[in-house]
Amino acid sequence: MKATGIVRRIDDLGRVVIPKEIRRTMRIREGDPLEIYTGPESEVIFKKYSPVNELENAAEACEVIARLGGAPAVIFDRDHVVAVSGIQKKEYAERRISPALEDLLESRKTFFAEDGASLRPIEGMDSLALAAAPIISAGDIVGAVTFLATDEITQPADQHLLLAKTAAMFLGKQIEG
Image 1 (tube, rainbow, N blue to C red):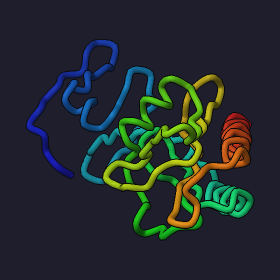
Image 2: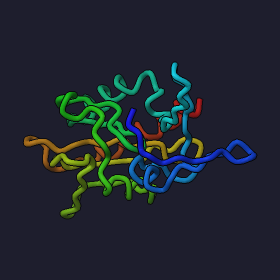
Image 3: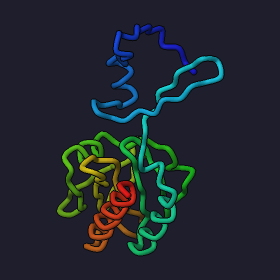
Image 4: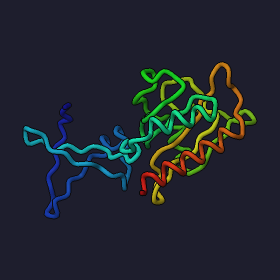
């Protein structure tokens, strides 16, 4: 664990304020769920809760999506890559989503790479998205499903957007259920 040097007091209702700098760095937004853990040395640990990470079948779903779409598929939670198929897992595992994908999710819109539109969904990676759809569960945005372009597949097909939307809806229902 890394000490921040910031100390906060608990108020009479048991609340503690997480400093703005930490919320910005950790991408914690108002309304985000946090899991609370305790450690062996009396630590209280807050961890961002990701319902997409809790899905037992995310990796399998990603594999099916990639096979049906004929292109690499990636499933994200609100912050990181959760599952990949059709590309090197080590290279993409746990990478952060890009600000561009974060903006797309906030707007609750889908993305389709046509007419020169481009989206780099993963921070620090050059991979471009063919299509992307937000995963919405109980009215909340919890992640995204994307197809990535490759050297062989540079143009999106209608099936990429349709499959991304379908998978996103399915995963959203799985989280609710």
